Length: 462
Image 1 (cartoon, rainbow, N blue to C red):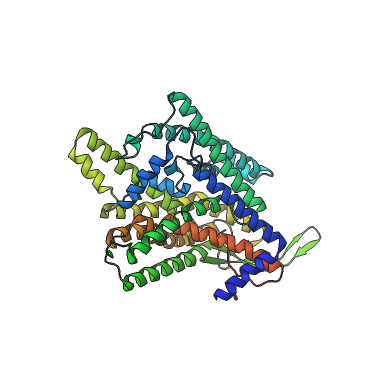
Image 2: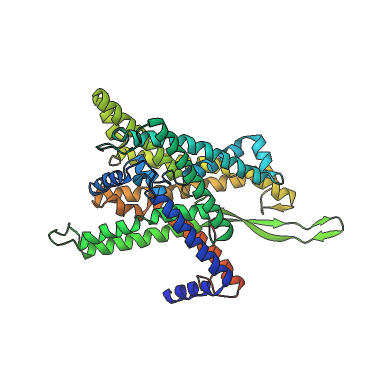
């Protein structure tokens, strides 16, 4: 199997167009990492990086909104880097436009018009600039008052005396960094291989992999003078098997589809007669992707932070108790996160999957589901099927999302290690790799080379 994989990658380099796309993608990703490592002028990023390093040693770096955001920026926020906002404002703007397109009739009509898709993309870019200006200004204020933003931090990050010069300069630089990353992502999508924005996020996540490998290595092979922390070979084998099982499960659910058979009747258009045929509607098991996990974690982190702040400011036991209730180690948090993920799974499907539109398109082109009447009955059948599939996909997301937290609590592993055993890191990495492999395989098959699999093909996420 490994020989087949290496042979396939070598075949990729034999195709001139694919080779140039791979090299171009690699160069652009290196530039994106430089953006995430270049500090903003006037900020002491080294001191903040040392603070996050101390948090990582205390195994508490993963339990905050800042840590979740830092995951998608590749650690740029921890270095006060130009790319500290990351690509997330662009992702947020795209999601907002998608949701508005599903509920605002004017935008919904614009999407279907000729050239409407280009206008929607332009609206997303304008909204990205507005989000960057707002988030950049807030981040500048956070760096200006690090004691309030980063609990336990002592020191000074801002080296510029005039506060408004610092705020305006930092906001413009952070906005420019995000727009540069957005442009780089679009260049990869157009001239490289894979989805550019997704690849930039994945590379930022994988940038933490060396740290996780080092921490895990020290569990079994500690430096001189340090005792082995209760780890043995059986423990290591268990972690390896768990990783393989999680990756296999993510691949299976990500690729899983429910195929709804469709029969097309014979029809005449003018003087031409089109024969009937059979096809299917592929309904993804994990239709929502990673979005419900991101929404649930981001929302649940805010009450805990708010209650902790109020409890510390006013010395009220009730707020401190509520803050503990929303901590990562509480069973209430586990249950709340599971329910929130299920809720957002159904919410995302309800806003993005339009069964009425699918039923109308089938009826327009003479298609029907065997045993189901065209029109409203077809829409109802698709709605029932999608509800059952969404429940299965939601349960899968709950399991994957809770694995890192459960491992941190019961196996006493650092969050830097457990984040690669599940959660958003695993879902994004596996999904992006599958999508990239699918595009590479399409080039190989066009040149009559074997794909990554001897039997079948790597299916895309869309």
